[in-house]
Structure formats: C-alpha cells, structure tokens
Length: 69
Image (cartoon, rainbow, N blue to C red; front, side):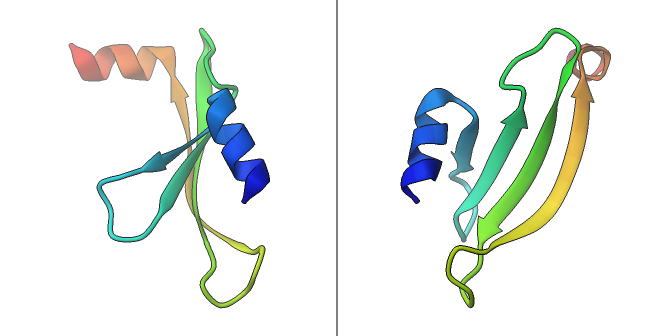
C-alpha cells in the first residue's frame, strides 16, 4: 500500500470515491496530448497483495473533445 500512496501522490493513481468498494484508476501516462490509457482495479479481499483488474481504456484527445461538444 505504501507504493500505491506514493503513486497517488505523484498523480499516477487516483481513488474513485463514489463507489461502495475502493476502486482505483491508474493513468499511463498521467497527462499527454495524444491520450492516456486508464486501468481500473481494486485490491483483492481474498489474497494479500493481489489486485483485480476490471477494465482498461484508451482515451484519445479527439474522443474527449467530441464528448464535451
């Protein structure tokens, strides 16, 4: 968890607050003109130091612009 806190402080990982279980978003890279890869995950309740991957997406700048228009 210490490594996760370090990554959260650096802006690589953020916790999504409006859900029932702690869900995290990992951005690669944190910011970029062309887009970012977002990976959504949570820690496993059954196995220590294991994560559960939910989904991943590639967000491109063009997609973000079209969603706000």
